[in-house]
Length: 593
Ligand code: GTP
Ligand code: SPV
Ligand code: MN
Image 1 (spheres, rainbow, N blue to C red):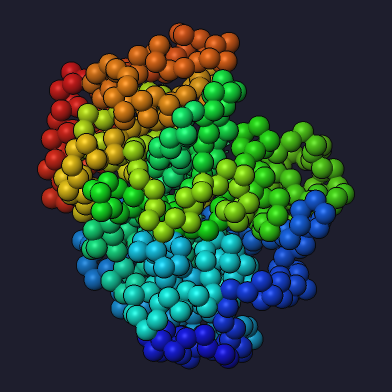
Image 2: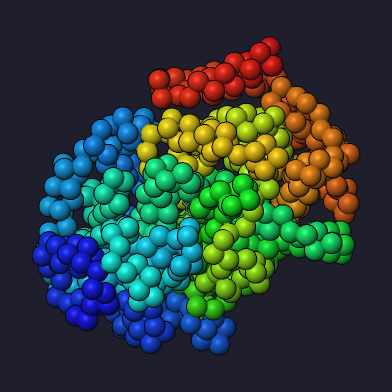
């Protein structure tokens, strides 16, 4: 093995893990194209990857996971803190020494006959004050190749780390992909992640949800910054001024789509543009000028494939045309490309489905791609990638936006009265569940700040951290806080708002509010737009004035029912619930009386 560092904390930890898992061979990932190329070829020779049509999809590959291993597993994800109290009521908890013992028993000897890949990676541009290093050990080439797209990998990361001990340890063992022994464990106090018996996405690309959210949220709590499940976009107006928005929606609720949206014709004609800084995760810190700044710690997009098409998200589609790994989509054998539900009307007849079975799109009753099938695409491919994507100082945030899937109740958009009320709005978020995690789909559950599955410590303390950050900001510098809902449905079950690119109409109102350019009506839940202030130019036929009025309305009787749900949810937190949030709940109760 040729080690790429002399950092003793790194070498000691790796040696310790080598003696545990006993690999046949050790390979350090150096970040070179040549090494990636060789690993791709090796994965193709074993069938782990299939190379796609080089002319139509250059450097693109297809991978299928085990049928029992297609999404995050929240019931098998643990926060291992010394006390249960530190993990809080919303997390599964395991006592650390017990967790280590269980995991080491599962991991022992599991690399026999396999290669250990050592992946040094950086979350955030190497050298930025926001950035943090990690090392993932894995026995999966698929993981190496995905991490090489999703993060900055290789020797430069170790050089920047020097002999520091400030790095996150990650051990991934595929073992036998046994779902009964699958565990995703975070040890926030030890900067350590151990993931066993999975080969899927968020369970194994340890830089993503495990580090950049679960471990980093705890680091942020201790160090005075924030790690959030938020996209970052820049909205450029015709004068060329850019305003940045961070938005938190639960998994598969539209972050990638919003981050890359194409403005409606009536806006692009005037010169409005949207630039993507990130589609999933934000790391946020106060800048020297007293404003909040955000970076995207990732280097690629791990996006939901189904529903992505030329109309819904052309920028995401364009991002997948080169150097992309597709997971659990349909393999079109006629031209050796990929397909998924909602891509186009050219249903392949001679194809293989996500389970690896022959599949005919015209006759098959079953879906060809898994609903949580994904693409792993380099961020640089995105036609609307922001010029600030690599900016080590991040971008200044004008607004925070929360949102989820609610068929009823939540209006298209509303603004909180102030920061503390905004934290309340984030804390009471609820959304219908999606295929991004195993379990029932379409059930409304509370998902505060879209962080329910990702907060690495006590949610009560996390809310207090949000309140404290707000209290430390000057009022005129604090981002304004909003809530949106693209998913309101009429009584026949049809979406009432066209969504996608047309969501810019709502972002436009949000920025106008931030700049004090537009009035709003004060309602029981916060400030709601006057219907005349949502620009419907070009969609007057699709969204009638009545429909707009309906989706902007606040139904007090529905909110009364909602309050009992909020009270039940809050009750679990006991003394961990910040007093400020109970006060906000009392205000809401009074307002809807
Ligand atoms: P994760 O990667 O799991 O964090 O998901 P995400 O939040 O990035 O969600 P994504 O943008 O991939 O969207 C998920 C699904 O929501 C896709 O099927 C989209 O087609 C759908 N969707 C996104 N935006 C809208 C919208 O404005 N309206 C409607 N009706 N559907 C949308
Ligand atoms: C999510 O589920 O929020 C994702 C996909 O972004 S995963 O990486 O699997 O967590
Ligand atoms: Mn996500």
